[in-house]
Each structure stands twice: as C-alpha cells, then as structure tokens.
Amino acid sequence: MLRTVLLMLTAALTILAAAPSTPADRSAEDEPRAVFRAPLDPGADPFMVTADGRYHLMTTKGNRLAIKTADTIADLPRARERTIWRGADDDPSRSTQIWAPALYRSTSPADGQAHWYVYYTASDGVDANHRMYVLESEGDDPLGPYTFKAKIADYGGYMIDGEPITVGGQQYFTWSAPGRGFEGGPQQIYLQPMDTPWSTTGETVALPVDIGTCPEVREGPTSIVHDGRLVLTYSSCDTGKPDYSLYAISIDVDGDPTDLTQWQPHERPLLQRNDAEGVYGPGHHSFFTSPDGTEDWIAYHAKNTPDYTYDHRTTRAAPVRWAEDGLPLIDPPVALGTDVPLPSGDPGPGPRAINDTDEGTGDFTVGYAGDWRSGDACGPTCYRGDDHWSWTPGSTATFRFTGTQIALFSVRDTGNGIAAISVDGRNEELVDLYASPRTGQVQQWTSRRLPPGEHTVTVRVTGERNPRSSGAVVSIDRAEVWDDRPGRSG
Image (cartoon, rainbow, N blue to C red; front, top):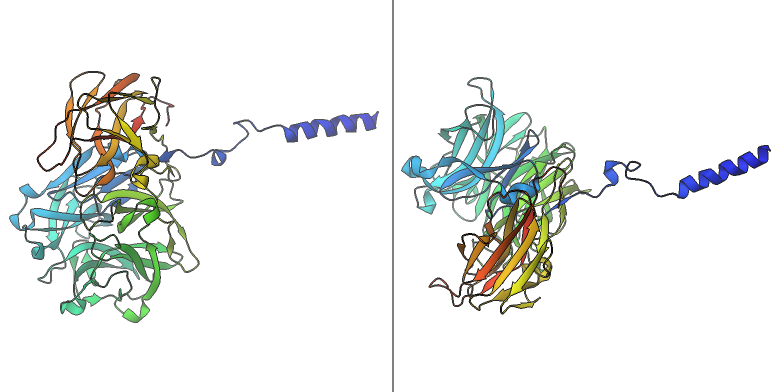
C-alpha cells in the first residue's frame, strides 16, 4: 500500500513539474518589457534627468529653453513642451543661439534650499560672443518657474556646453572653449572650482582630452560616477561631421581634478558612427537613471545622414552597462525605429507601430488608393527598411487604428512635396515634407488627443511643393499609436 502511495505521489509531482507555469506563477521580471522607439525628440544636445518618477528632457531650441516631461520615456515624442525661458524676453546679449541646456538640482547657499539650475550657452547672434549663463528655479520643481541668476565662468571669450561636476566633495564647472590655456587652437575642455551653483572662483585648468576621432573639437563635457570613479565624457569632432563621437577621461571621486596627473585618459570610444544602422555623428549626451534607480542610461543625439550638416540631429536613448576598464559600455547605436525595452521601473505602456507594409482595412492597418510605389532602397533610413511613396495628386494612404493619439514618421527629401492630413475625414492640415539633405523617420505630424475608440488618419498627395523642392513626393513609413485607456499597451 505504501509503495502504491509513493508511486502516485511521484507521478503527481512529475506532472506538476512538467506543467507550464501560469502568468501568476511567473514573476514580473520574467515578463518582456514594453518598448519605445526613437526619435524621442527632433532636437539636439539632449539633457535627460529622472525626478519624482518622471522624465525631464531638454534639447537645443535656439531661441528659448523648454522642458518635455513624461511618465514614460515612450511618451516623450508626443509630450508637450513647457517653455521656461524666452530669448526675446531677455537681455539682447544672450537672446539667441541658445544651445545645450543642462538641468541640475543643487542646494543654494543663499537660502539653504534645494533648487534646480539650468546651465546654457547663448549669444547676441554672433557665434564668437557665446557665453555661459544660469537660471534658478524659485522652488524645488524642475519645471520652474525660473529667474535669471548669473553669467558664469566668463573669461572674456567664446565658451559653450558648461556643466558642473563634483569631485572630492567640491563642485567644479566644466565647459568647452578654444585652445589649451586660452592660447588659440583646437577647442578643449576646461575646469574651474565653483563657490556657488552659479559662480566660479580660483584657477582654471585645461583637461587632458587629447584622445578623439578628430583633432579640432572637444565639447559637451558631462559626467557619471561608478565604482568610486568619476567618468568625464566628451564629444570629439565638429558636430556636423558623421565622425562625431564620444570619449572619456576618469578620476577617483575623492581626487583633485586640478591635478592633471590624476586624470586617466581612455583610448576606447564610448559611442561612434554605425553605418550599417544608418547612425552618424552620435554625441553631445547626458546620463540618467531609470525610474527605479537600478539602471544607468544615456541620452544622445545622432543623425541618419552621413552628409556634413548640423540639421536633423535627433534625440535617442540607450542602456549603459559597465566594462572591466571602468568605462560605460554602450552597444553600437541602432537605427531609428528600433524596438528598445523601456528602462527598469518605467510604467509604460509603449505605443503601437503601424508599418507602411501593414496593408488592409482592419484595425492597425494602412490602405492605399491611387498610384503608390514601394521598396526597400532606403535601408536603415526607413522603419523596417522600407517605405511607400507617391507624387500623383489625389492618391491617399489611410491609417486605421484604435487609440487616443497618433504620430506619423517618414522621409523628408529634396524632391518631397506637401501632404494634406486629416483625422476622421475632417479638416485637412498641410504638412511640408521637404528637407535637404535627405533624412528619414522624421516626426512629420502628431494628432491632437482623440476620444477613445476607432479612428482614421488620411494622408493625401496634393501635388504641390515649396519653391526649394524639385518634386511633390509624399512618403509613408510608419505611424505610432498611443492608447490612454487604462490597461492598454502597444
């Protein structure tokens, strides 16, 4: 009898072991993460920070300073910008060419309270007159409001890309300016002690940043701390070149950064062009942590054309691991539109993509009427390596979806014309798809927030073009659909 019971128990355990686990049996860590897809923003020089579980992103806007805020990184492409400072409202000497904002939280010695500080470069319209400036938030909110605080580290010459770092318990200001020791020559990275979050004092030193892809420029210094060392990363080359890339020097977190012998240069590039993925000029970046604080990430800009141009640099993001040499380990940059798992602790959900080849008349499809062509000649410039295009007036592409908002991404080119876009058959909006040089996966148009449910978006070829364009082509590549109803995901 006992033998029979043991045999039955063994058989039961074998069945249980072989049975597939149910969702309740699996931990959340076993579930695949939702994804996001770049570009996150059409701007360059991204600075990203997570605070109170939200993402805050600043990029170069030229005539103003603005912050995008979102609960999930996947929402940044559709997040509304909040302008916190306008050049037109400021002193003419710092009213334009507003570049490379950086957002830091620090304690003010004036009131002992935490404030947010925006460091940025601006000029009067003459490039050589760029100087560094600081805004201070009135309270402890990264969205402000802000007041102008000071010009910082002004030595009387061109300077850009300033940010603070902390070494040995002391804050230092770093920036990019011409020539080692202010004697002319290639742009270098400088450092000076700070006595407040908006002022510097003491000796200025030029840091040992000789290693790089190109000799002429070192810019965009920013830092990350890991395993007792501060890694100061910087961009090498003119940012208009496809070879723009990232390098680093490092120092003990308790060291003296004014002692140049304590800095360790590193030969290995952290991030560089990836022609196979159509990624050129990756650089001018920032580091941020995942919402739960367990992962390091990088936000950087890049473009998908090898042409020498400052245009079409868009914001992307990637996870950071750590190599045995103590440097950030970042996978080669991937093409725009690549699925990237959300950072740890990001609540999602991500949007759902509709490719130009998802043809049909059902939900999450696109239907074509008129004269359209398609192919894969655009390679990594296009989502999934293919797109549709037409120059025949009256031809239409209609996206069908269930959701609350949609954005359209496609090619802009020298032969592209003007499209007319409508939601649910209502009033059309004209969108110019021209650009020079050619660039892909541009966020061409984003709908307003829509009532939950089924919708259509129709893109019509008008046959019209602006005077600079050589044609009237309209391109269809991908749509991103968000659904804000509880429990919905991409």
